[in-house]
Length: 73
Figure 1 (cartoon, rainbow, N blue to C red):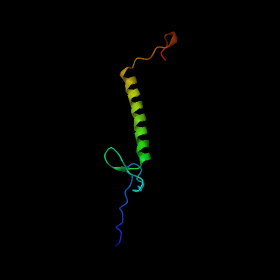
Figure 2 (figure 1 turned 60 degrees about the vertical axis):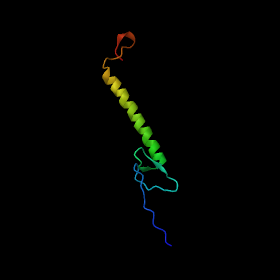
Figure 3 (figure 1 turned 90 degrees about the vertical axis):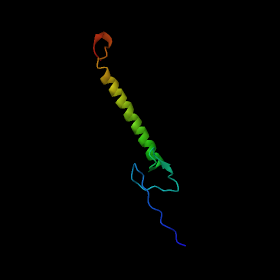
Figure 4 (figure 1 turned 135 degrees about the vertical axis):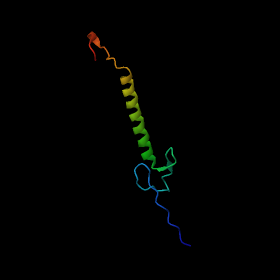
């Protein structure tokens, strides 16, 4: 009996093919991903969120910080 060809599945993040014998990860939407691609994306999103939160905090309080000698920092 012949084997059926396995369809190629690509990582939703990098678009490279997955090796289904070792790449068994999925993102939060159930899409196939390389584990390292997913970790890299989470780290990047986390750092971008931290920058966005800091920017929002600065914009929400536009008063300049007063340093030593009464000069705006």
